[in-house]
Length: 162
Ligand code: PNS
Image (cartoon, rainbow, N blue to C red; front, side, top):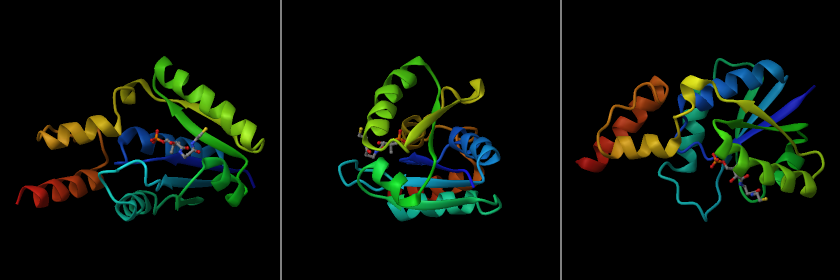
């Protein structure tokens, strides 16, 4: 059974992430969504919130599962026994950032081979950081995130305001 890991911060999950998850899960028998829980990054959404969001969004997708991970991605890949890592690329600057990471990951664990999926053009401007910035200033983030995530973010920002 071909297994892939789709790693990320998912802070929060965007429409672009969901498109990549759907496409990767159509290629692989098993897709493990690895949610980074490294303490050096200070995410806006807790690890529990990010895992919960992804579990809800993938509940109807057979073969997918969601797991938090700490430390190195290559160790997580080793632990899962996955055959590949999936990363999405939106632009040439994404590729420049991703290529050395993929090469370093391969050096650390030859089983951690990275496959890149090209983001669809309609998602190329979407990023989790843009979503957070827009949400902070009450911009309309519908179209950037799935409806479930929109409701979740709205509640979180409303509770911070009150
Ligand atoms: O969604 P992101 O923030 O672009 O995902 C980045 C991620 C999680 C793939 C990357 O930061 C990562 O793999 N972190 C784990 C630590 C690690 O293995 N770093 C690579 C060193 S060569």
